[in-house]
Image 1 (spheres, rainbow, N blue to C red):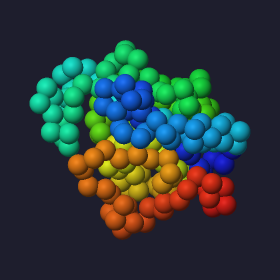
Image 2: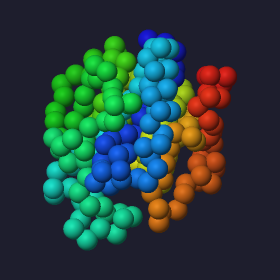
Image 3: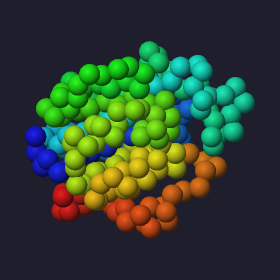
Length: 207
């Protein structure tokens, strides 16, 4: 592995969010796909470990509603075993070690040697939506986590806030995230947490 103290954190870059035909399309997200491809290639080239998170819901999930408010509840999206729950091609994790939120695992040994880790979750917050996220992060024990994906003001925000409590340095790639409308943006709150924001092209100079 490359720099053991650095990991990338790919948030929910799934078909249902990114593609215009997706069930919970984030307007403009598809325009980031070429940059996500660059980030994926960069991680592979530099042998950087990537934690990939993914919404993975069943019909009874608490965040799903037939009458969604688009803040706390949303229409069906990223349903288990559907194409919409898959990653877009540009961020598809290679040979990922997978951790489902609803399965039991006896060992986490595979985490140590995997370059791609896939954490499926049933909540906006990956730390609440999968019981193994904290274990995985403790095993990896990074000092710096570089975050990108969707959506800025929901799942990315929860990841950033959760990570800022657990690791020394959190960097958000500001040109590799996209927000949903009608929900406040978290940038001021991130700044208070000491989160850094930068463009992907500036990343190499600081890691």
